[in-house]
Length: 189
Image (cartoon, rainbow, N blue to C red; front, side):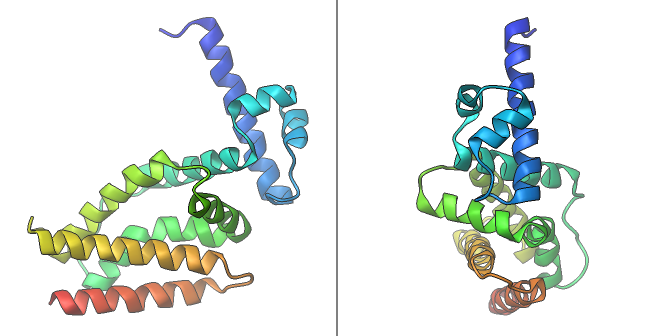
């Protein structure tokens, strides 16, 4: 059982993250300040900073969105083409990026810079590689794992590259992913 102090700290952190998300989505990452988040959360700037600097808050906000989407999705499909099945595995995460392109750009930039990391991102990566491996044939050989990992890395690279382009059309992202997964699936056949 958590102490009252721990519960209060967690509630404050949750309020800070909720307000950060709301402000990031309303104003954008660049226009939102730590002071804005503190004021909206009705806490001090120091309390917000205890939850994280602005980039760390965005990483946590995005990680929470990704975790919620991952938890809500159903099991990977067992029917359809190899390409369609892999696309359906990554589609919920693609939607998060395409619905919040400006925040996705900032999130990707923070992760690529190496100044902040995402533990969810790394644990989810292992799970997605396993799901892709199952689509590719479900054997445990090293080549199949390497192919699934290559598909995952290509997906992340495509996603991050797309998010870096201002005004990019989400259809371009889906087309690029489809082309990549088609190549991988054809080579696997």
